[in-house]
Structure formats: C-alpha cells, structure tokens
Image (cartoon, rainbow, N blue to C red):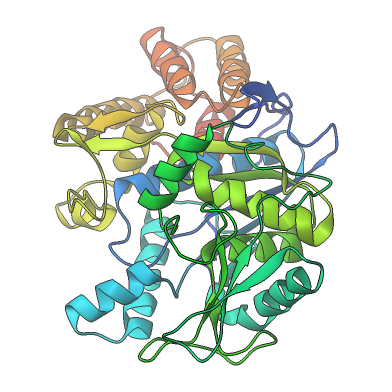
Length: 414
C-alpha cells in the first residue's frame, strides 16, 4: 500500500549519540539495537476512522523522532507500520454512518496520509493494509493450530469455529505478563475494556485472545487456510512485523493503551510462530486528555490535525506543540498549547532569518546539546528548551544549526 511523500531531511555534520529509550517491559532505559548499526521499528497503525486526532499525531511524531535520531546517529533504519482496515470498531462506525466499510477505510487512510505529510512525518518503508495480508495471516494461524498453540471454539452463528490462542501453552521466548508486568485481575479488566472477550464460553482461559473470527452473515470474510473468516487483532501485527522486519525487531511502538492486551498478545503470537521475542524493547507514548478526559474516539472529545489545519494553524506549530511534551507522559491539551507554540515558532523563525551575529562555537555546543537530549529517551522538551536558550543567549544562526532543528525536530525555520 502506498505510504506518503518523504520530507527532505538535511545531513548535518557529526552524529548523535547512540539513542536509548524506555522499555516498558523492563522499566529500564535500553539501547534497543543491541549494539548493532541496524534499527528495525514497527509502530501499530490506525484503525481508519476519526483520523487523525492528536493522540495519533503525538504517537507518530514520537516514533518519527526516534527514526530521525537513529538516522542522525548513522544507523540503517527499517520501519513498518500497519493499518487495521478491517476490524469491529471500523465496521461498527461504517454501519452507524451508513457507508461501505471499505470506502470509510480508504477515505480515512487518505486523510491520515495528508496529515502525516503536513506534519512532515517520515513514512514507513512498508505501509501495510491488513486486508492485503489476510492470506499470510491465515497461514500463520494454521501453523499455530498445527503446533498446538491455537484451538477451536464452537460458534453457533457461523458454519466454522473461531480460533483462539492458548496463553498458557509454554513458549521459549514469552509467557503471559512478560511484556506488561500486570497482575491477572488487571489483565482481565483491560481485556474486557480493550477488545477482548474474557466471558466467551468455551475458551480455555478467559484471557485467550482471538486469532481468527469465523465468517458471520453480513461481515467481511476471506477464504483461507483456516476456513472463511477474518483475522483477530493481535496476530496481524505479529505476522506483519516478522515478515517485513524479521524478529526480534528493535522497537515495538504504540500508545500506552496498547501495552495490554495488544502488545502482550502480539509478543506471545510472535514467540509461538518464530521462537523469538517480538522486540528488544516495547516503547509507549502517553495519553493526551482534552476537556478533562483522555482523547478518545468512543468519548468523541477529539481534536484533529485536520481541524486545526482548517482553522489556519501552521503544521509546524502543531508539531512543536506536541514535541514540547515528553512522549511518555500523560498530559492535557488546551487551546493555549497551540497559541504558545505559534509564538515560539515566530521567535524561532525570526532568529533563523536574522543575521549571523553571535559565536559559531556556541552553535556547535547547541547542536551537541540538542543531539544529546533527543538521544536520551527522546527528550524533545529538552531539545526545544535548548533551542530557546540558544536564541535567548544570542547564539549565532548557522546553517548547520538550522538544519539540525529540521533534521531532528522536523521543523524548518527561517
């Protein structure tokens, strides 16, 4: 599937330090590349409806920053992202609005592309629609069934059986709770809240996740190695990440609402399929609130990139506003966020358009400081503060410094 246009990224003399990120699974900072010069990144993509709200944007900007600092440090970066273009929430939204689910998905994916281009997010090398991978995913489910990791649950409303993953069957590279560190009571609550079906009769364990949903009347389905139907949610990312990037990948990324069950179960599927961990590190972005509640499609309290752009916002200011917060923090969006970012951007533009008064040596020190901050667990607020301090202190405007702001923060000033 087509991604979006690649923004220009300047080459800046020198290199960033080797980046470290916070691994949710261990709670520690790690170099997720294991000392190698190749970095493989997989970020869970959107379910294409109500795109692109600020929670989406903040997540993809965070991992865009990781890709940028890896490249600045001299790494070869491979990046894959899916889009879940068939799933219950999408089907429910299409039915509610009286539109074909395929048309809704296509229109929202196109909107997402345009928003990513406006924000100058580097596109994935592989932008993968789940509907293009159904056959391959079904083959993986069939393998799990053959090896005893998948089992059938009778389904009265279908001619076939639903297939579930046995979370208690031992694997070499995963056991339940390894990635999330959660207790069982919390897992059960989150499973019910986030797309699981812990009360489904016939399952071996309430936490066992769906691998394959047998065909139902009125629902999309595909003929496959495991019969007519469609994939479950978690197996999609396991298969796409493994096929496109090889396992283990360096970083599995997404919002913190994916820690459980999505990333936990994706890791379990990958271990059963490949006898390898899914990722060296699991990295998660915080949740953004608006009007006192987490930005959520279900709550309808969405602030969208397109809405802000249509109201005249500079996309650079949107990017700057989001990067001014630590990627892993939960925080609340207020309208003043954009006002403050617009004012800061005007100051940066005026500085970059001015004379070269100041000391070039100071500019070199600022370049080193910005690189250090972004390499240290994507500390973009620290990098933004370093630029602010440089401007306030009269640091020289040099082409390299302007280029670095572009290369690492994705903001072209001047």
